[in-house]
Image 1 (cartoon, rainbow, N blue to C red):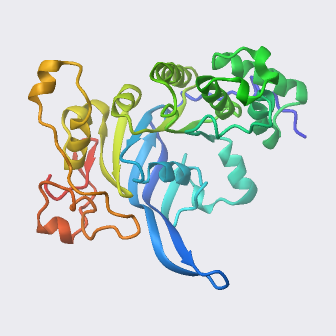
Image 2: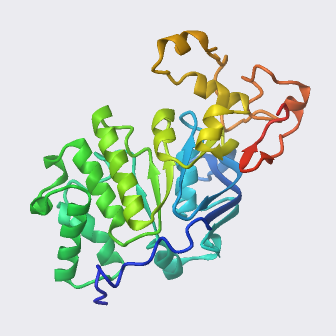
Image 3: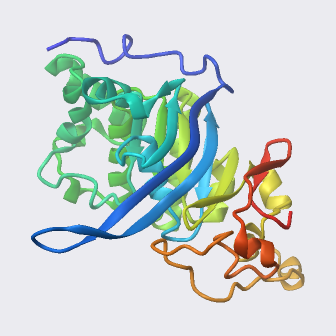
Length: 341
């Protein structure tokens, strides 16, 4: 096995090329067939979890991805890492088309891409010690000797704010916040460039959420990391993100810089989401208009024709019901898919 040192030799200058596009997504579609039958299975429907989205993530930035449950946020994140194979479209990582990679080539590329999972109670193997959990990526990628891996695990535990003395303990001996820190340490083990954080704080108490968010920001500054931060808490997303994308029923509705999208939302769905965020000023809170969406979210098995949001949109017209809106740049770095904008 290779004995590559996991400390100095693994380090790369992440800051180099900051601002360049690291991840480029072009018309990404991830569809899941729905089958029936025991002996001979046949496809009876298609779940269009992600249905043609286009965006990019620049090196060193955090792109926040928000939307209602079931809109395709997590599927998008897993699709970027090729945990779900795209049905159509392309995912380019540092110029390399990930759709073309298989086997060992994809495994080597995955060393540069890692994931922090949503549930810290389900994402850690209860039969493995923290040392084994955090050190497993190093073993998979053949990095370091046994002694070097132990040293690397101790270093990672210190980085995420845990005592290295606890490396022999098991997940059930830690709190939820500490477990998520273990998940962060595991993601950092192979020194990645890009991390998908799939609602990493939604299962934690509010006070612990702030600690984990601050930790992620510190790690980004220290190691020059690039994040796709998936969440449904708009206040958290505004705090940590550089740009924010809004998804609905497998489609991207709007994408803009953080301040732009919160101060000048263009899509009616974005406006409705932001109107539900409380403002810590009772005078302003009483004055502002709350947008209440009527009806239920349609099924991704049978998405509406035209704009998928038209069934709940307060300003929909006949064109919205017939034609899919174009994904277009309304102003510099502000993209939207809406006929009425």
